[in-house]
Length: 416
Image (tube, rainbow, N blue to C red; front, side, top):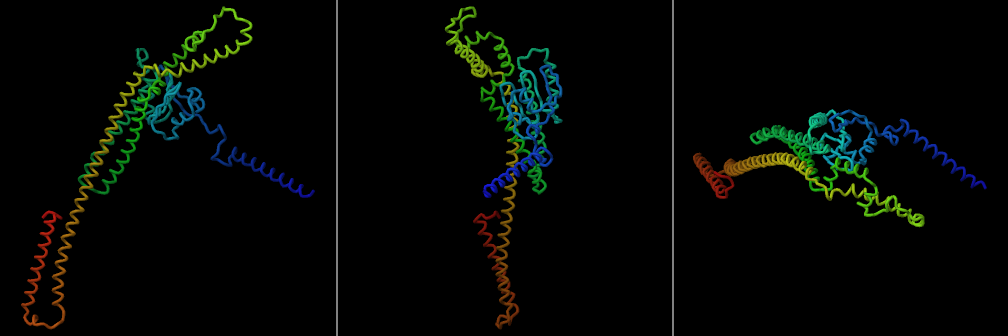
């Protein structure tokens, strides 16, 4: 009996120790023990947003992410595109009730009657706010066929294209003199400047390419463009909700109900009335969803397509300018490589000439070294004989060097 009691006490001790460790971990998480961890729901703070309505009135709001998601019916993955803590490429997304725009520094949510802009001290954001309010207040009394969401989207595209084009022109003005100077004088300082500018060019090309691809993707997908007609969908929804439910069933669900004044059989109401009523309500809900979501088939998207096409031409020209700059850099690099290759070839030619001269001089030195040895010969009896040896050896070496030069010329090793 002692052994089971021992096991029971051991298990109780383990459970007590585990419970204590769990409570200690919760205390550390909830307190200041682990500063890197936060309680669920406390990591989302309020951020500053700028709300601009259809009349051009703007005001600054402090909203958290969950409130914006509920107000605009957006998923959390779309809100991450607007978070300044994350770096995402330029994106334009059409949703059921909003358009999510993330173009460079302009990050906003466009609905049918307002724009919720991420507040920032960046010049692009302030320019977008002031220009949009100015245009809306100016065109308030004028008739314009362009819906509100397209006005906001057009301004975002316009400012983005203008900003990218200005950066390209600034880079072009700075790049051309550096490349011309490098082509005339190859130095480490000029190479470092070109390397830095080429890095900026590649980064700018990727940003422009992403905006161009995003606009082209929207133009190729009729469904995405149809999703962006927020004003029309809102009006259609309001008209659908205010219409007669019996008319909606008969027109969309193809179900005919008896008139309100028609008598109902008690037997039919008891047996199949409940099933028919459920079927009627399900038909109303399904027809509503199909009517609101399948508008892309008969949607006239020419207005948005022409708007996107106009800015696609602008951003495509900007991209072509960047590609021209890249080709200019590549041509300059090819020219530098040709010059360096030419210098290297000249060094090889000089090295070949020096090698031939060294070989001839070695022959002459060998002859003089032989006669410089201490051995007895009749040639040393006449001092003039040694002079003739030197003259004949020098003439032979000169003739040999000339033969080398003729050989090099015939083989076209280098022009002479």
